[in-house]
Image (cartoon, rainbow, N blue to C red; front, top):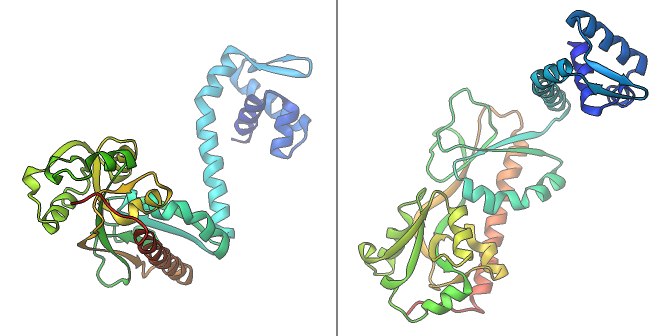
Length: 300
């Protein structure tokens, strides 16, 4: 296995000297490992051309067969060592990929720098298995009885679109608005329509996207108006990529929550993460209220 690893390093770097430097061994050791592998194979794996080397056809075939396996072993070993050396490394799981992309990921670097914690973010729509290892679960629809629960934020829905689209639809009957939707949340549009006194059956829905993060990008590109959770479009509203078509947010009745796994080995860091995320959502809501006071929507 050592000889194979040396062989892959030499093939990767195209030089015995550079391979020796990468592996922290001498060039003569690299030559000995390659020679023993060639003796075992009964054929030449590298063509020596002075200071340079090149894979022979047999060497190239063997390199392609083993390079991915060696890389996987090296990565797994590195992660093992890192896991043993790092006291706080959180695994944060979420059933809301759009929420993760819009709210968590943009600020995750700052959290890790401030708290000296590494965070691995995993998305899955299914409930975690009993023995599955994670520290925090962020969700809207996956109850975990018996675990410490943090209420992060109550969800509100808003109708948004590109500034040009909102301006174009201003004053029109909302039943005639060109709407787009997210397949992951089929309830969002009917809940918003009911609260605004509209008939969901009469709304004009065009394209439907799998997730909100796709639908939000489409709305910003002018594909139509979108009813989405306010937390997912807050930054786009702040930058002007999106505008409100309806100035009134609608409570959906849903709540974003975070569960701390009772089996977590990093309880303090997990709680610090939940506290940070709750504060980020709270600060975002305050900023949105201040922005709304200076703007107006197109709903009539």
